Image 1 (cartoon, rainbow, N blue to C red):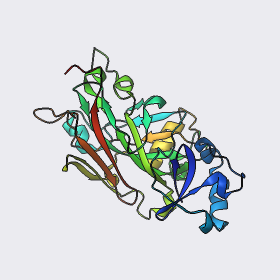
Image 2: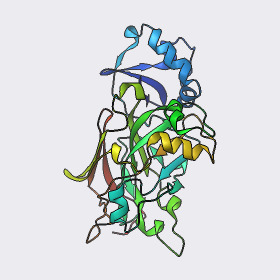
Image 3: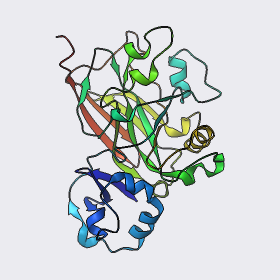
Length: 283
């Protein structure tokens, strides 16, 4: 099953068209995307058995698949090449921070640059579909509703300011958790642990890897995080970025107004964002 939000409403993606969940179900399910995840198993069963052809309307997936998550987790240094370019060893336990929910936006929204130090980080994002607490690694996937694209944009000056890094603040400006355009359930991805991931800036590929290179897999992350926190339906897990970020280049490279950022993941799709200046940035 593939889902998205359209005009703020829970939507099923059907080929090149969209199905409004509330209208197609005759009110059995509501329009709120949060309810989509709260009733994930029930909705999946209904979609599998319903004849929805008459409810398909033209349109494109355009919204964040889970636009109102209660928790947004993000994993650092989860690709060996990114750890190397950051000058640190591959971690034995996943470095974890949060991105505040107000940073979540859709896949086509403009990225407002709050400063001259904004970096790109293409990521695979897992969305929780079943409440998880103290889950075994072998059961991790059973708690995942699906996978989508993500950009863990980072304001490096704020992130690294002071004696103690401010990861959560530096990564939580509005629009710094771009996700979409669709959420794809794991059963639709035969190679769910080995997907090509890529980021291009102005047509130049700056990141290219495969999710099989994750140090900690999606299932392992669900297990590890759930042994500390209760993971709730609709929660996001940004699983980490591969090597190629701007901060680690010599000289460092950051996004500028007018830049176009394209993020792609095999089997899921792509999102295209344009960088625009903030009124708060001088010049």
